[in-house]
Image (cartoon, rainbow, N blue to C red; front, side):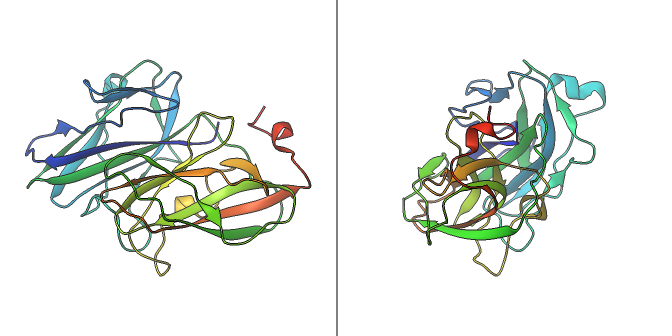
Length: 264
């Protein structure tokens, strides 16, 4: 399984002490509990990266019972807004020494801030990677004008701005932005995981964290020239102008998806 992105999002959050953020109401891989404000994985996962942002955010950390084998890990650096801005978005990265998230344990993100505002957090989880195939890498641009539902995953009908030659393509990176973007992830036909990124609210002069554009996460999934994966976005506002890029390698002629690693 390639990686999977999950998110927490709270509005009018005003807690000087560490308090749980709200989970999204549904997830295709983990089990959300909106009362306990946790996600529960159906298998052991590796935590690769974490993000937390808010206007007055002072502290954030990841909580699950088994993490007390040492202590609840803090998320650092923190973003000074719920929607990331600037170049090379700040992440807490664990890729070289991933943390184990245990099957059946609820995972929460807690935060403390100095004034009422929106706070968002994301975790990037995995059970392994699919090696990047050999070949040339191409950045392909997509756009969409669907209005986002603030604070909830919204599915876009994104379209590339050009036609591709017939064939199958491996996704090995991504970037995405809109006016209040927090995160973006892909809906890939036939699979439950949703690989994605911490997005940003600045245009082409800036970019997301290098983890997402330097092919450091292996293959995210495959698609053919006949259909782009759907894109899901999490925004703080009703953004209706979305721009993104997929970093791809063409892996063969025709539809090879069901013969490729990780898709069987």
